[in-house]
Image (cartoon, rainbow, N blue to C red; front, side, top):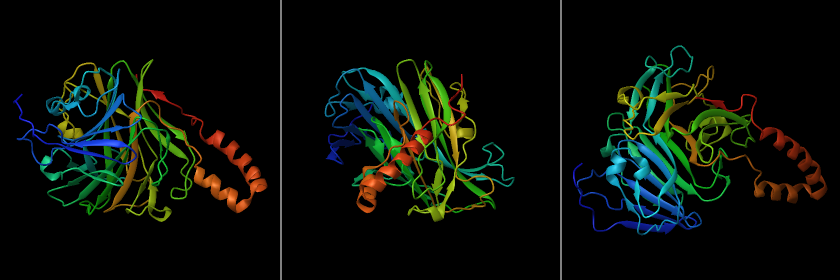
Amino acid sequence: MQAYVAFAASLVVATMADTKWRINKDKPVNASQGSNVVMAQTSDQTHTMHIYSTIDSLALITLEFDAKVDFDSASVNWTAIMEKRYDQAITSKATVIDRSVLVLPALVELNDTAGTMDYTNATVHRQLRFNQTSSWSNASLTDQGMLLNYTDALSNCSIQFTLVPKATDGRVAKTPALTYTSNSTVVSLLASNCSATVTKSRWSLPMLLYSGTDKTTSFAVKQSIDDEYSPSVFKVSSYRAKSSTTSNYVSWKPVVFGSNKRSMTNMTATTTPSLVEVSLTTNITNTSAAGLMPSRGFRVMRSVVIFGVTGDKLYNQTTVSFSLVAGLGEPGNAKFSTALVATLAASLGVPVLAFVGGGLFVTYKRCTGPASEGYNSIN
């Protein structure tokens, strides 16, 4: 691998609920403008670091160490990231004991002429692959989170990712109200001006989750509380990789919206085909828009979220908005918001609230339990 010469300066930003950020630290001088590596650490998770990379694909990496990691002294290993040795993305004195790696390789247009919502070589019509580094703009920090913007050079489709690392458990305010856990990242995707090129166009998002071979991989759909923007959707989909001591996951509410302003009038559900294990010895670039994972001791599972369901007739969407959560630990459970309880108390009074609360508690216990299918082990 070619030797690199690092920039003398790097950008450090401390904002967003005491989250420290560093954009493109140690970036090689010969790296393309669109190559971004962003480091983040929340103030109360000093054993954990988040890394977001736009090299080759969008990679969301969370590393847990056996000791406190000094954010200011830790270094980015650009070579390891380029070679997809994600567990070595950060160079520090502490040792990595667990990691969560989610790779988003492309936004894929499907030709759903049969209306079967299949993701196959026959239905994949076009891939807007995120490996063209020249189409990524420089990362920027806003009050909403870290922004990574990608523009497809051929179609002019614009895709914005907003990334927010989390240090505690809770529910995101932006709808749909996804649950998140500590040591996770909330990812919001907004694709705009993505014109269809086939008559029955569906957009889809393939996801590659990397995990150690000691972990059992599984997929589940759990019942959950809905919200005002996704009524009647009482589900959360989750993929997890779990060993006897550690686990990592990605979860999403199976809802997609047709505009940036999310509402019940422009939403539809999503479809997720079966998980597929990706071979580590075969170049899969043409079929799944991802590169090789040369490191031994890892496996890669591919899941796909298709934006739509059979029979909804919502074809040829030019704008889609979707959210997910990825990180360490177990997928979060739905929780009642304090704002909702306070509003009910003020408007209904304590006696009525107690009556309603009893019914809500029973419903909550039923909804937050696993759906009948539970977790289905892959191996």
